[in-house]
Image (tube, rainbow, N blue to C red; front, side):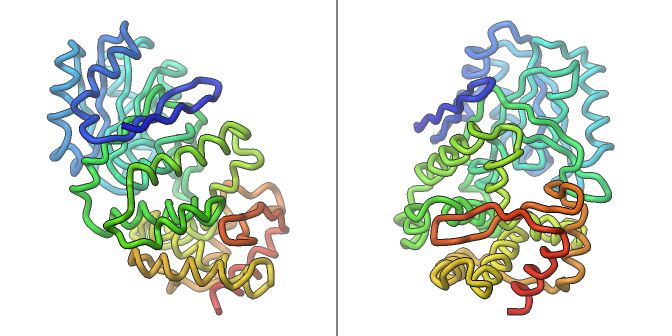
Length: 353
């Protein structure tokens, strides 16, 4: 097992290894000895695979358990489900000493985390990510949110989990396209600050040590978030490809998944950066090879104009300015604050090339 300690206003461990789900009850009981109730938030697909294992582990440690399951997919990360979850917590008389456990991917983690942050003004929650994307990114760092009709993640809170358990055995049950979504986020971490990650990803798949890659990504995110927990500066580097990616998700009615959308977003911004001489062609060459290797898209049918229009509601916008992430070298990115109108030029350049 690999353990990464995240030192923020509340410190917690990210544990990465095989068979951790079976130890869930023991880990939670050690961390929260006074907790009586554990509310398991999951989705219908994950529940069929892992709910019984999680509940059995919790029952072994004498937790009273309740479950709240949602339909899989981004469309469930909405205000209706959020209020339904809060009402369920209240109905079950969950108290401040109890715990919410998010068992699933990023949608489940975001929804459960936001409920934990706001129910009774904050109760403990544990992240148990079951997708690669959630393991390397969304389960760590304390961003919780739901989507509004006008945009993604527009209602949320910064609220750190008490523990993250990444059982890599769960990755064996993922469809290939869902696994590849996670590789899109790993590629993002390589592009923004680690040539070593990019070099590892260029190896044959059989030689990739996925547990070490997850730990590397978590460590990078930990170090960035430690400097900027509330996302007002350096943490925005983690949004490489996300301004365009979130626009694509919204335009598709969330039919295009997050990993695929940010893959396209990274490709568009990198093509634009090369054309504008902001970074060398090597960046695009390596990125293109990796996207192709992991069967990730690099283009979209949505027009540059539509992408720009959808990006106007991006949460990174501040008045007439927006901060986006620009590749400047292989394994290096910078924040670029620009007038919102300039973003349209970047999108058009990367879209047309």
